[in-house]
Image (cartoon, rainbow, N blue to C red; front, side, top):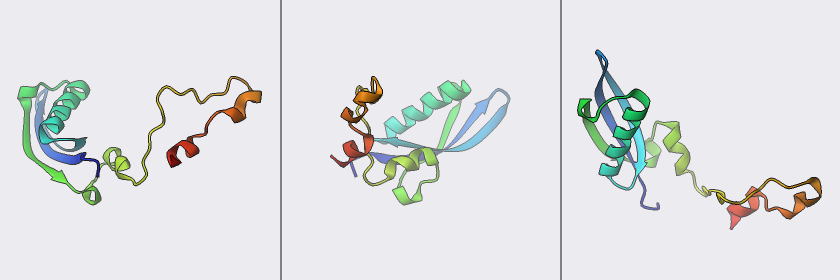
Length: 108
């Protein structure tokens, strides 16, 4: 592993007049970073203030025990990300063969 841990938390927060309980998973380097991701997500998606959030439980989970698909996809072996600034779209059909394909970059 590259030092990135999967953290999960059981959360209770007040949204308008109702209390919501939910299960969240995050990939982070440490527990405080995962908690900050939790606060940021609740603020941006649900407009919940930090003071209204109660973290019931927070712990590190193994990759095999993950539930959320958005976190699971980053645990696959051989995961590679494309170069963010490389233009893969050919200018025209004549130059199509000169550009590197995504599969060949993942092998390097």
